[in-house]
Length: 635
Image (cartoon, rainbow, N blue to C red; front, side):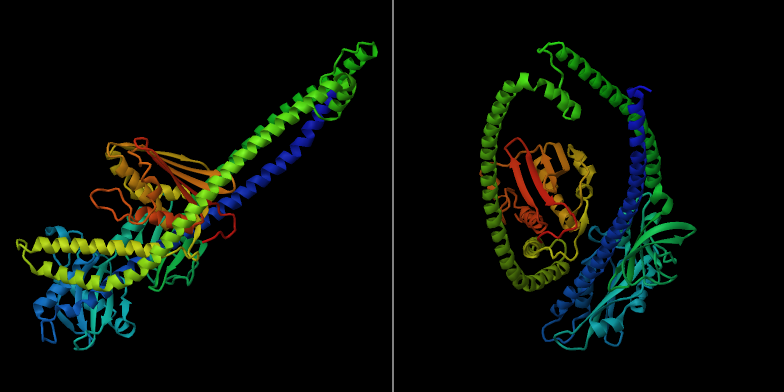
């Protein structure tokens, strides 16, 4: 057997076994990683939905608590109790505070109804109430029957059981808060029957064709489900890791059987309100990518074996040819042909043998080439050193600017937090009085426009105060999780309404590369991206292109680039865009705190933000975040 055949068989045998082992190992690692990523993603979504539900209930209770504080303003001078007309106006004011309120009523400490409940049988007839659900007089009786009066009187607030209420038979719940009027008369309970329609719509918006999201009550009854269009019917449903009719006490991921289907589901409790959020997917749909990975892995193992055999043949042929060239060169030198040279096309032993034959002839040339190469390397080192000095100088300047801006935002946040607490209390009272006056005045009264302007300015003050409080708050690090920035950017675009962007002539271009997740708050990052996208949309009044890029760069950093083709930012304004209260909007529609909040959010996530812009050439925001590699970065 010739050398060519021997080398071919040897190379093929050596490569086949490691190739099979590597393919099988990659397949198993991919299967485990995909299953783990699926479970982690479902648990993250379940916690997000649970957080939204908890925040939704807390916000509605907060509205009732704030409204209860202005109850005393409805009293007449010298009168211990408000007039029936004033009580009706007060309950109507509370009813107007949220589109989720179906009916509002007040009770004394013995559970007796005080006055008439506020509700509408045909809210669609009024522009300001058309988002409320209609209620009939018989439906309003449920406020007193389902109100958690005992819980409210004992602990200050409470949430009743979930039930199907109203003419539409949608899931409802009664929330109640207790308070003590300053002018006496015993404790009062302000209760509101709340529609869970908005919670159901949120669940429906997050669900996909193969992933169902549900919210259940404490008895594992269905309140909302994406597979039903968001509407639940309070029928019992399956919950991962729990017995029938019960909810687990903590977040978990488990495989379970529901409705004859095998599901992989994640559960997160909605504390302290006794609800639960479930995200599930069928096992077949979840493992579909794994089956595809198996097929493609086997295919590529076969392809790799074929390519390996071809490469082995080529390698063996080349090696045999090199041996033959060495033999020919040796014979030429043996005959006295000193000008003969043997090709040095490798650095292995055969290449060393060829170099030994050519050493005397090429010694001087090799020395000259070495000196030339060293000279080029020295010049290259000098140029590289100058470039690095310039880069480090620029980084130091940017770090100084970042430190100064961070201290400015921190100082403003601390000042804003103190001022906000002092402003909120009198502002709430003033706003409540103005709204009561507006409710009392007829539509054509000459003072009504002035009061409506005053109400609008008071709401604008409250928004500014809220933004200042957001600047004062920092990311705690306790509620952070791995975040996929590409998905978060897509969610931000969806919340900015792609249809409205298209109607404005704005084309959205996405350029996403595979990246590692970053650790942080998906909600805060999403709000920051929304702020930048909205600014880009305002800058492209005649339409244009919005480019979104996500990529992994050196030093384990994930970079997000958001570019527009709008009017751009002038050079004199560019250094001040992150300054609090700085805005170029001539209509005073902005507070100038949006980009300050974006800067604070990026800083809280251990990242950096840069802006590139020129007038007429568009603007580019570059945000860099450290990739999540199992280490805790600075908060």
